[in-house]
Image 1: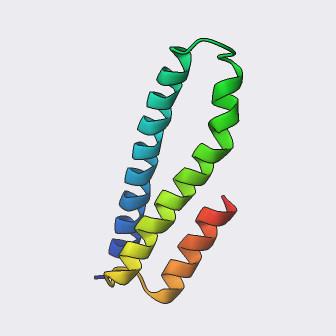
Image 2 (image 1 turned 90 degrees about the horizontal axis):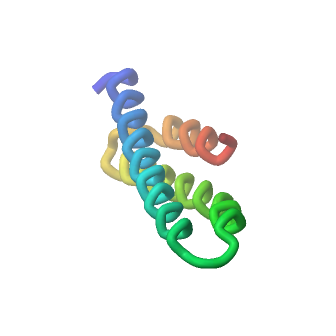
Length: 86
């Protein structure tokens, strides 16, 4: 498999992780809006944690791609740095 194929698989995996995280965030916002109390503060309090969860999910998928041989060590490091820096 060529470099473009590997990059494509990585992009698909990262996109899938992002889609899952967005669905979870949407579900959590719905739960917060149905509760009594300060509804405006609740989503803001979870925003940093949700961002970290997204990064962790992407890193996990990236590690799985590396372990399965789809990514080389160099490709893994570059993608990992992009996730952590972005």
